[in-house]
Amino acid sequence: MAKQKQRIQDLVGLVHKLYAPELAADWDNVGLQVGDPNAPLERVLVALDPGLAAVQAARDADAQALVTHHPLIFHPIKRLTPEDAVGKVLWTAACDGVAIISAHTNLDCAVDGLNSWLAERLGVQQNVPLQPVVGDYLKLVVFVPTEHEQSVAEALFSAGAGQIGHYDECSFRSRGEGTFRPGQGTTPFIGVVGQREQLEEVRLETIIAKRKLARVLEKMHKAHPYEEVAYDLIPLQNQVPGAGLGRIGRLQQATTLDAFAARVKSALGCDHLRLIGAGDRAIHKVALCGGSGVTLLQTAHRQGADVLVTGDVKYHDARLAEELGIALIDAGHFATEQLMIEQVTASLREAARQHHWDIVFEAYTGAVDPFRLY
Ligand SMILES: [Zn+2]
Image (cartoon, rainbow, N blue to C red):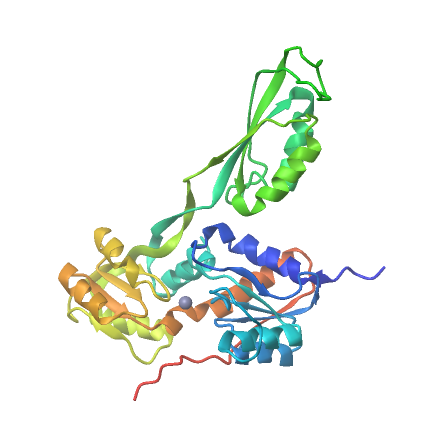
């Protein structure tokens, strides 16, 4: 029998397992941007940006998918023609059979994601999220007759309910008495029309990611014996342990801003930095956020950071840093994020290997920083 080939949707599942979409910001658009989930998959290219050159490189390498950090589609599109910048990439990707999958703020916030890699690269130890993230989760409570407890629980778990970090099948069960009275026109599983029924039930509680809600409810309804299933959905405000935007931690030894800047420059392989703060000021506690992270400046200051390392710093950000008395290093958007290419390639390769999937992952090395100094 021929070995089952992987499909684009398997890759989407893999990306989402490593970088849960629940971690993404509300305004973001992560996941499959273009492509047929059922199309076969053998080769994947990983890039920072979903530009035309990267799509063409994927096509030339016979790759069926391009995994990127930045999403291709941010605003709803009204027509699909190759006549505007995004349309041209979408058109080319669709015509050439290259699916595009993006992991953006979910990659930024992941426990093992862009900012934890950046922290490691810069020697920032014992780092924790600078701004913890509240996940898009719900608590599902369903009342089940005791003899159906196992089958309903298994149905929920098989749809992806009950996952907390690296634990799955998480639930809490308590026993009690349920009552109901079947009305006219019902065909109750237990009891008689018009008579109050009282029986032992299990209150089964579990957590679900919002994106899995439809599937979980469908499975629950299928497995539950009652005509009308009693259940509650409760929105949660839980922080996701270890996940969040940016990181903050300490250098093994205090140093000066100039000396730390030299370290950042060589660790990120960039040929220039922009600094705010005196060169001899002491740097021990370091906050960082790849890309455009200067919105975290006040948060970093409140948490006692001596410096924030990020990209895309504007004039008024620089003035604010001066006022607050926190140093700022602008290493550039590209230089603070391009490390994701090698890291995501390696992580996906390892995850596919664990599944015994025959997929080749390659890093796209053709991108350069669009800025040059003159
Ligand atoms: Zn970015």
